[in-house]
Image 1 (tube, one colour):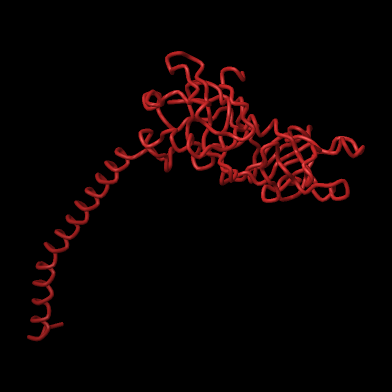
Image 2: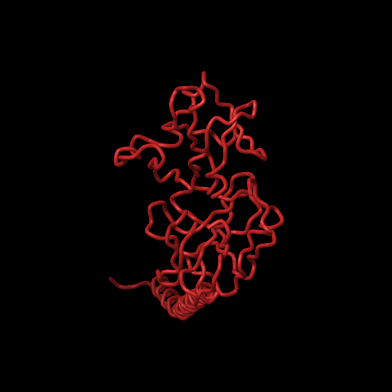
Amino acid sequence: MPMTQKSLAVLAISLVSGFSLAPAIAQDNSNQANNSSKNSAHSSQSQADSTPDKQGNVRPIGQWNYQQLYQSGGIRADRLLEASVLNANGDEIGSVENAILNQDNRIIALIAQVGGVWDIGDTHVAIPWEEIKLTDTGVQVPIREDNVDDYGLFDEAYVTRQDLSHANQVEDDVMTGPRTWKVTDLLNDYASIDDDEGYGYVSNALFSKEGVLQALVIDPSEERYGKGPYAYPFYGYEQGWRPGDSAYPISYSSEEAKQLPTFDYAKYSALWDSGQSNQSNQ
């Protein structure tokens, strides 16, 4: 079909526009590629300069020191697991057996053995943390002979049926699921460093007086790591650790770990502390 003068003009404009846009598009694509490359390089550099992903929000080891722990004091796990359970009148009715924590690394309940003084036999109960009063002589609880059944150990808030489906022992070592865990899941556990290299044992845990797990005390197994003990900030779920893991991975390298001084129990003001050094308590 013959093209009119108007059609030829439109075609000419289209061709010119196409040629004029091509360099712009190419330039834009080039800019996008360069920007993408720069962003990728920047991201790679940022990742290289920051703590590895598996360490999440781990603070630099140089920002971690014991002064705040020493000044604020708190609760030693080994002392907590030896603490007496007292009724409202201050009479001893049992002893603490374990502590249940949530995914925020906070105590939500204590497992205690009570009942011997009431001639009902030893009974394991779970006492909500908010109902507990810390005293110089133990943990004071609102449990009485007539309400002990209200503090069932297997309350769904702490232990579910699914948690129990694979459990054979259901008292001192009650199994807990991913929502909750026990402080004994950590104590005396292996500790690893670098690429899953053996480092030592978790000998203690330090809680704030509000029940938040702040640090793990770890004793190295070899002199090349120092004599210890050393207190490391606890990150737990934040770093991918789960109860039942074969070892607790320290969130720092062995080179970084060398910067830590020995943790001095004598400077840490803890409830129910006999005042003796850690070495004398082993």
